[in-house]
Amino acid sequence: QVQLVESGGGLVQAGGSLRLSCAASGNIFGIGTMKWYRQAPGKQRELIATITSGGNTNYADSVKGRFTISRDNSKNTAFLQMNSLKPEDTAVYYCNADLSVAFGVWRDYWGQGTQVTVSS
Image 1 (cartoon, helix red, strand yellow):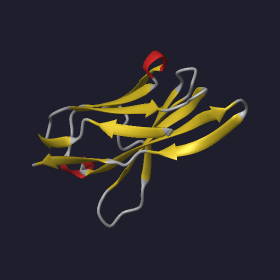
Image 2 (cartoon, rainbow, N blue to C red):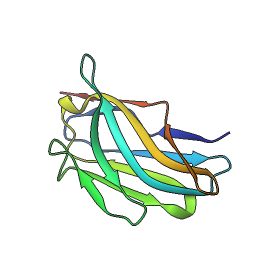
Image 3 (cartoon, one colour):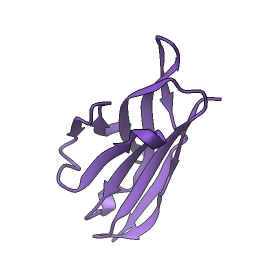
Image 4 (cartoon, rainbow, N blue to C red):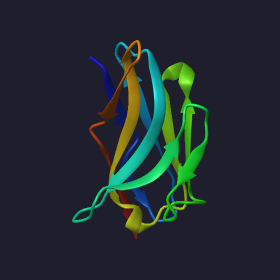
């Protein structure tokens, strides 16, 4: 079964850091663009970071300069290093990726989400 599994969320004080991981598992032929989204209570899901298979990255203005997305293709894993965390970063963080599940067949997958809570 192909799936994405996030880990690394938790409770941290403002100014602190967390590192999220997103591991793809199952019978995977390839991994394309990987993304991190977040959704705070009562708000829409927000795209915050993107990394292509070639390593090109893009960030939302709200996290630029504080968050860093990276990937380890040998481990089918993406990471989100979050520094200088603020209470407004509190949200459920989701990983999203384009996964090849058969030759020439690509599908969009979501992880189950991991809670990040930043206390003031």
